[in-house]
Amino acid sequence: MLGRVISVANSKGGVGKTTTTVSLAEAFAAEGYKTLVVDLDSQANASLLIYGENGDERLYDAIHNYTNVSDYLRENFLGECFAHMTKFIVPHASDVTFMGKPLDLSLVPATPGLRRAERELIYILTEQGYSMTAIEGRVGLRLRQDMSDLRKQYDVVICDCPPGISAMTEATLSASDLIIVPTIPDFMSTLGLDLFTGDIIDSLKKRGLSNRPVVLPTKFDGSPHQSIVLEAMRDGAADPDSEYDIFQTVIPQKSEFAANPVELGANPTLAQKWPGEALTTINMLYQEVQAKLAAQATDVAA
Ligand SMILES: Nc1ncnc2c1ncn2[C@@H]1O[C@H](COP(=O)(O)OP(=O)(O)OP(=O)(O)O)[C@@H](O)[C@H]1O
Ligand SMILES: [Mg+2]
Image 1 (cartoon, rainbow, N blue to C red):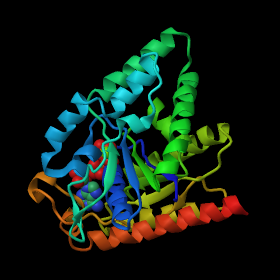
Image 2 (cartoon, protein in one colour):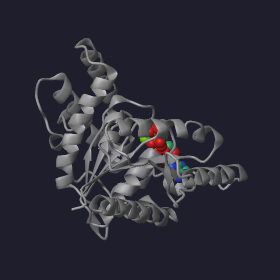
Image 3 (tube, protein in one colour):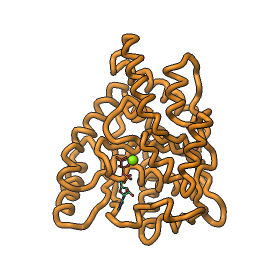
Image 4 (tube, rainbow, N blue to C red):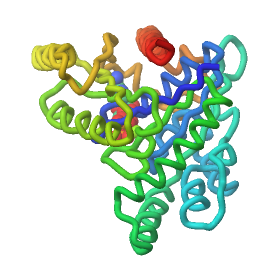
């Protein structure tokens, strides 16, 4: 059992966080690893991308059956009860087939109600005298406890974080072994990168953690401007004082990565969902992630 938690996060929107989360999770599941995706974004994009063609109905079921991350927050922090995250898992969530069989992927879905649940949480706990840091600390502690149990049940748990920065995101990052930061190598997207990775590092350091976030260049269009920025990002990562590491894999800007569940229809194969060079690139990323997790395991053992 690998038992590792990966978060995919960047305060910048539209950089490919959800695409990275879902494609990587599907790669792990295809390799036979027990995989769970936790969707922490009220846009529920990761949930819909995993569910596939009948995403709307399945999301409705998740709301109706209280199996979603909004109810996890409500039950644990707004009610008096203790409800472990396992209670909110939807098993066999993916409609993808691989080698003639359904891909076995579990999901804690997000719902649009998450935005409200998070607001209520902050409002109520602030009224009870909690500071923002204390709220993050409380949610983080709970998430770390739940993640440590989930590590025993799953090989990998991959968390799709929303854009912006929220108490839930901070808490999740503090519970993660590997933080992937998808970043478009262009001027605008890299402006906030140092700030974001610096913030992550500061918050992890406060909790005695020291893992550097790993930047994943995404939506690379091959233009001279992006090529220069990509090189600068690589140089930055090579600096011994750098607050981030960087993947060798680069995700190109290609329609093959923009999977559309409705167009795909029911039960696409993995290769239909990620056609052309997309699947090869995803597998390269998967190999690199495996290598980073293995290196961490060696560090821990040393
Ligand atoms: N490599 C790519 N090439 C082309 N389109 C892409 C690529 N990666 C993602 N997209 C498309 O770009 C849009 C944003 O991607 P995605 O939802 O993964 O980003 P995000 O960072 O999760 O966004 P948000 O911040 O809103 O959560 C989607 O329509 C997606 O299909
Ligand atoms: Mg997203």
